[in-house]
Each structure stands twice: as structure tokens, then as C-alpha cells.
Length: 198
Image (tube, rainbow, N blue to C red; front, side):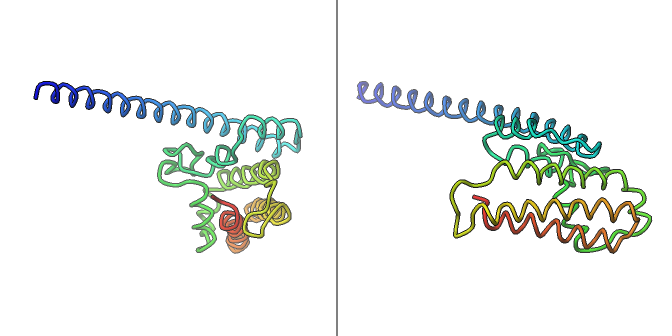
């Protein structure tokens, strides 16, 4: 009986040890992911500023592709701040850029809202252009469900075009044009996610 109890105790101890190692491994993986997300956000924000200033350095795009093997790390910029994204003011923890674009595509901003949010919306436009350029670095090597490089590039081009239209609409202070460009931008993202997201 004692032998059995001892064997059971050893088994439980080993099981707990393996479980603890699994938790530590998962925590380390999460930490590494968080570091990559933060670094990618910094790189994408810097790229967006360069694009706004009229400069685009192809070597920086290649460096982003090299530093982040998965597009999901740069894509986090679209999430709320409490999920590793840039967020949209004033409620950055509640509102991510992705949600803001989706909401604007459904209902137009009032002229007053548009004026108050102008700077943030211009930032969204340039961040989206930056992400369209980054996305072009991740063209899939093999088709997925019949969709491949041609469709990927078309979605990235549509994203860039809609982002440029968004900036123009904000500068014209046109709520209707902002809604239209947000709708096109949202559709380019949703279409790509539907066809390519794992």
C-alpha cells in the first residue's frame, strides 16, 4: 500500500512539474509575442510618418518583413491599446482603428465629429497606407482556396486607394466621402481576411 502511495505521489509530482513547465513555456511565448507586437507597432508608426512626409524607404519595408515572419505582428496596430494596438482616441482601450473604420463605414460622422477627429483620422489614413505597403511584403507563396498572389496584391492596392481617399475626404471635411472611403477600406480588409486569414 505504501509503495502504491509513493508511486502515486511521484506521478502527481511529475505531472505537476510538466504542467508548470508548460505554463512557463506559454508565458515565455506570450512575452516574446508582446515584444514583437510592440516593436512592430513602433516600426509601422515610423513608416506611416515617413509616408506622410512623402518619403518611403524600400529598405525599411524589407526590414519589417525580415523582423516579423508573420503579418499578424504589424497588423496589431489596428487593435485597441489594451490589446497591443494604437487605438483611436479618446477611448483607445475600447476603440481600435479596425472598429473605428467599421463604424464609420456604417454611419457618417457629423461635421462636428469630423472636425474634432480630423488629426486622428488623418493618422488612421496614413497608418492604413503603411499597412498596405507592409502587406505587399507578405504575398503568399502558394494559393489558398484558389486565391493567391494576384488577389493578395489587389486587396493591398484597394486598401491603399481607400486609405488615400479617406485622407482626401477628411481634408475636404466631407462626412459622406469619409463614410464611402471607410466602407471601401473596411471591405478591402474583410475580403482579404476572408480569403487568406488562417
